[in-house]
Length: 268
Ligand SMILES: Nc1ncnc2c1ncn2[C@@H]1O[C@H](COP(=O)(O)OP(=O)(O)OP(=O)(O)O)[C@@H](O)[C@H]1O
Image 1 (cartoon, protein in one colour):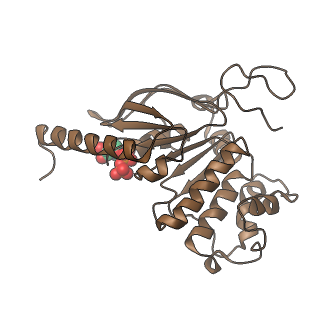
Image 2 (image 1 turned 30 degrees about the vertical axis):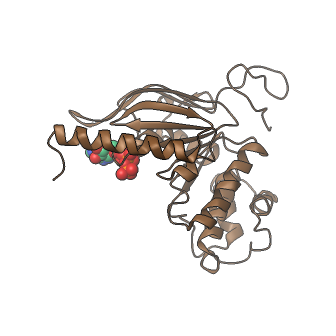
């Protein structure tokens, strides 16, 4: 069932009850070793139908946040909910299933299986869950403008086209949320724009929810909101971020991070 766009308190399509937000973090922290705190307690709600960019200097905790939010890593403290389901309550097999069925992933390296056709790659999350694609893979491919390329192998596609296939694969299960980690990091600016436009379209037309980690202010400008991390803390949030504003923010945070590292005796 396609749920209506909206945040907490939105009624589902049947009017039966409130629809849970796509993602909720409450007091989520991650300490890798005693004293090495990559993420201080974070509270974050991402309503359905939102495109959030996560930014920050290198080492600020972006990947840690994404890994905890996506159930790829267990936080040291706090709770993570995907579409209302608390991840800590799930055993490993149930968590694996939730990741496959209710989360879409897009990575910088698209991670397509070279021995499978493009259409088979897109259908993979359904097949692994024991479902028949029933035309869903074909429709997802058409939605990213590659309806004619289903029989090709990933190696026959350009980098941008492969990333489009990765987006189709991420969306094919109609997940609660898509996590994209530097999805345009390996692409030239023009190709990157096409991929970002697709993510934007998935949110605006498909009602999907996207959380994207990026270093690129131009990429963040496609999001509804940019969230900035520094030294494992959320330090700023910008609604409808502009690329210039984001660049300035990143410069300031980079400067602060450098000064902090010097104070604590890191670096050269
Ligand atoms: N497995 C780990 N064990 C110990 N420390 C880790 C581990 N992974 C990350 N860290 C540390 O946690 C902090 C945050 O790392 P993280 O990878 O989340 O940052 P990031 O913002 O994603 O960085 P980048 O932009 O360079 O990818 C860093 O200080 C890093 O060294």
